Image 1 (cartoon, rainbow over the protein chains, first blue to last red):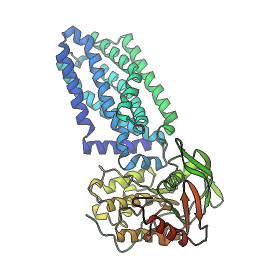
Image 2: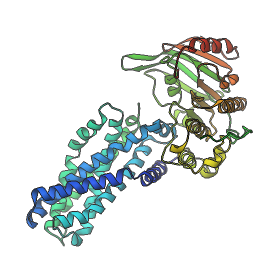
Image 3: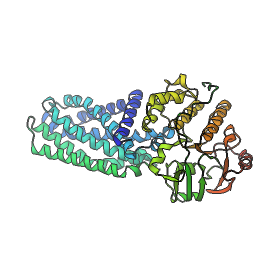
Image 4: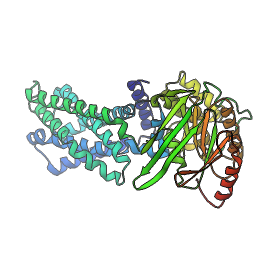
Length: 227
Length: 257
């Protein structure tokens, strides 16, 4: 079975189980909403401050949401040891990881898209004129979050103190994604209506991070899932 | 709640190839940290044999099965698979192995049918939905196909787990306490299924303890102690003595061996 087909089968299973149990999406969306609202109340930013600091707070909230959501990505497979069932199948181990990455990417992106208008309202930021650019940043940033988080979730799931281990491993590694996504978002909100070189540079940085991390995950996928 | 098994036991594994795999363990050792789970196991299991692994808890039965399923790698030594005299690559072996483990390896949030369709797709089987329906029939779960696995009793989950393992008509079937949770009728059904699989040429390796209905199909018994083989009735030998000895020794134990 090809890698993409295996990943597609696992993605379909992940979507089906999540939309049936609704364990992750609801919790994560509420969590991000609380963080955004709390940040808004705590800092009470002016319009200018919101454009400068809002993106950082937003991406920080997405990062926390990612570490919360990704925690269970492989933990769920421990119930009834279903990870062993996946490993028994004649598929490339990276197919399992890729399927989960794709599912996590979609779940995170969905939460982000739902909460973006709430962020815009709370921080008085006009997102409609720059929606396309914002979505590009969201997609590239979320690929970084989901790919890195899924890999570390696979590692942490087999360790003791796994609930603590994932954020400890994940947050430092995701610092480049946080910085690049935040800077790109700040740039877009600062100069709506024009594509700046700064914005493109940060996007290129995000794309490079994604490609490097996906390649690394593909190369070590076999060892990530071993007992 | 339990669903009765159909009187006919045909169909669980009669829907495909049956050429069994031959296994060759050479000086296989498995270490978990400081603990040696297997110590230099050298063993050949011929195609079509039905081997019972017996021994106390922690004797290495599950580890041996996991290595045969390629769920874990040996720390030392190697395992090879053959069809006749031709070696089978480790990548190809996976599509020919079915396993029933301690856990059910099933998704609670999926229905019985969805679980089987999912695994049929992962194994690249043609007509996954048809295969799933076909597999549910002999385990007596056809009328519960649309129910979520989390609503099933332990015995029903175990039957579904067996259906999952037989889905791709394996040439090597690995059973780790497969009778766990099954009622006497289910045990009898499992014994008959194993016997038929063995007769069709499938190689079967199972860990077992005590006396149960699945042991009637056994053609060879191996006793493991402390990660070593201490008794082996050999291919073509009489496994009864080892099985009876195991039943007597294990009768004082509780829980899975």
